[in-house]
Image 1 (cartoon, one colour):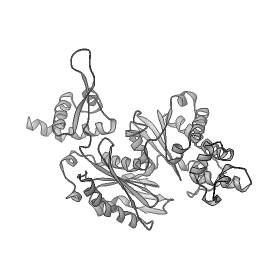
Image 2 (cartoon, rainbow, N blue to C red; image 1 turned 60 degrees about the vertical axis):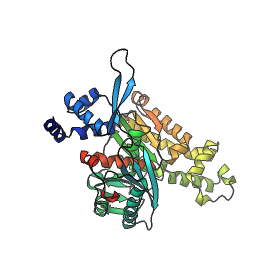
Image 3 (cartoon, rainbow, N blue to C red; image 1 turned 90 degrees about the vertical axis):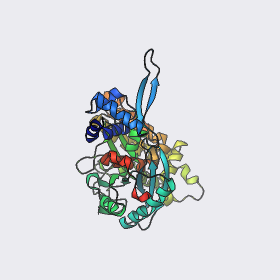
Image 4 (cartoon, helix red, strand yellow; image 1 turned 135 degrees about the vertical axis):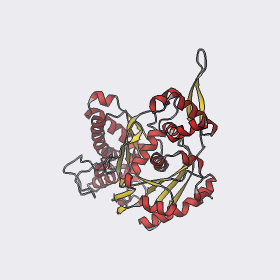
Length: 407
């Protein structure tokens, strides 16, 4: 029996089953057989070994009318830990997670100045302290989510207008500093992956995530796997043209979606209307300063019936709705998940965008597409990045070794 088990280990049966349960959630033995190249006999023996190792357990689905009750196989909660980090402005959010997406702990790591060197040093310095705090040795890999155009295959941040960084080899620099394989991912794609597997999109196999904050980014997920594109740019909808005569974007194009639908665009439009003398309840706020007006205040005023704020919201959401309609026609997703601060704080923004999407997309495709609000906040980027790192470097050896940083 030992010789047979060694052959099955060489085929990567344990890794294949663990990966399948990670990505697709609980499955039956029959489903695992249908979804892998493994035989029923291999599945049976390997599952028994994984159960003995405390990595997998059986759960009863329902009581059958006769014979044995139906069961599913799923990963054991908190059996192992993975780390991920999300970069927003000048702060990292570092998180520790189990293989089912549960957050074990998290910490915010501010740094200054806004340079790659300072960002890397802050993260590398804090990780050993964080591991001691959680008192659990993590799988020795790291995933990070950053804003900008990211070549995930090469760990390269090609450009980030938000941070002013160009051609930064974040993956190799962190690998040299930590000694761990490191995967770099666009922040929106990372946040979308967490929604796809553990959040608002977990019940769908094909979905699109759109994050709306100071910029707009997206992730495309087919069979619960992220589509990267040739250079890692699949999902850059914030730079798709929605108005050929629109404002100039830092990317060099005119009329990009994020210049018309993201938070800075909403703030600029509200200020423009107020300077023209339009009446608004925003004027009535104590200590009102036009230059300090934030999108969150516009959203709040719109929800309270302020006409000017509603006009601003409708304009921004309409452009997003047009883009969503194009995505529906192009990709035919089961679901679109809207994340970021604006969808969470402004129901009228979401309602307008969905209305426009359904008006402009092919009716049969649009009707079949559901729209949900994302469930994760800032921790979603760290969780998605950690998952991508394990997707790229999944190996059964990780479950039998200890991180050197925890020793």
